[in-house]
Image (tube, rainbow, N blue to C red; front, side, top):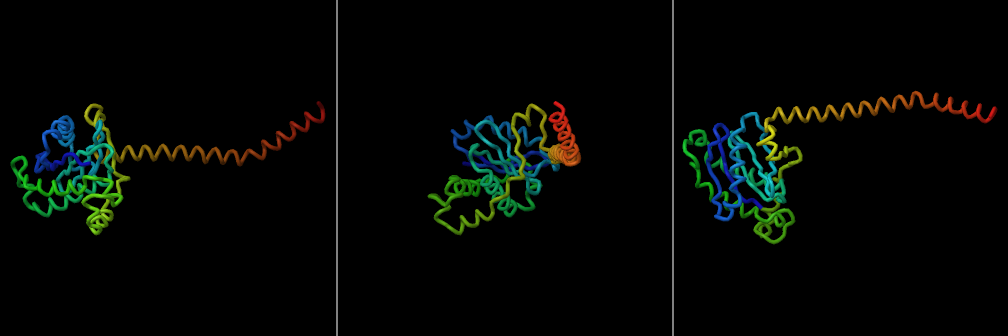
Length: 226
């Protein structure tokens, strides 16, 4: 399930709004929230617009829309599609509610009134089984709401996944060009492997008949004279 949500501004990392977490959740997620702040201070306009960052028992998902970062911390088992659908809903409502005011915000959590919508949406996304299978839960009582949710589920197959330890301690990057470079290297390696296989197949087709004839003569001579 979605455990905690925070909304930041990309340009300076200023927190704009957040979920109101209970004491037990706050205590359990203290380390992960500190890690998230370190990560988001490194985000720029060239960063990946969406990413999942794995850290222990939880996964941190973020979505960047119009200079605003929407972040949620979820259980590791929580479906990525639901996490990004959740963030997408938050981004649309936040932009609709505060368009024109975001860049002018000068104090942390200037839009804390948004926590009401965050809480409402978090409850809707609480039970992943009811959302994806139509079981018991809030979504099942409203079929049209479930249909709309299924239509809006994001294709997350292309969204990058990172490891928190790699990002914080091993110099890994969330930069879009870094991800592109990695993809190009991977594709290049696949191409070289395929090219080698094609060349090998061509050599076999070219020399296999010659080898077969040579083997025939060797066997014939061995049979004839030995």
